[in-house]
Amino acid sequence: MTQQTVVAVQQPKNGFLMEPQSLNEAMELANMLSSSNLVPKPYQNKPADVLVACQWGAEIGLKPLQSLQNIAVINNIPAVWGDAVVALVRASGLCEYIKQDWDEQTK
Image 1 (cartoon, rainbow, N blue to C red):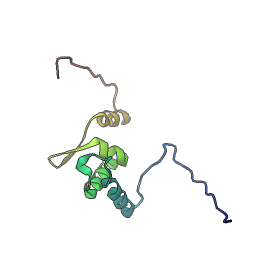
Image 2: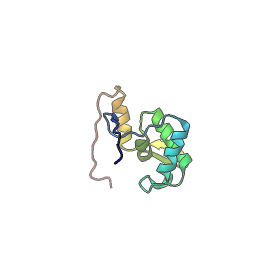
Image 3: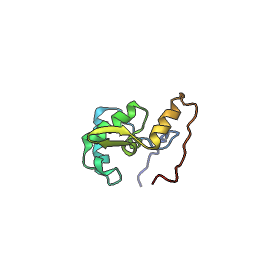
Image 4: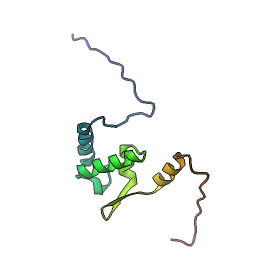
């Protein structure tokens, strides 16, 4: 019978994090993510685009998966969109309030 060693690993408070610590780790992560069907189609099979989006997102406070879900590339220009814009503004501490209205006539 073999003896097994159990090692306690302290997990971050926010759960599982994928934050590469080197360029090699970032490239491995980009390759893995780009091969997934769970990332948006513009990033599938494009590890370089995944890497750039994750880096760009990191510079503005987004984690890798948040970056891929919230950075849209339109005519080769990346732009933050959707709720991520509101979240980043609120997190900045500079936002006093946000008023959102729904116009029933706009469809």
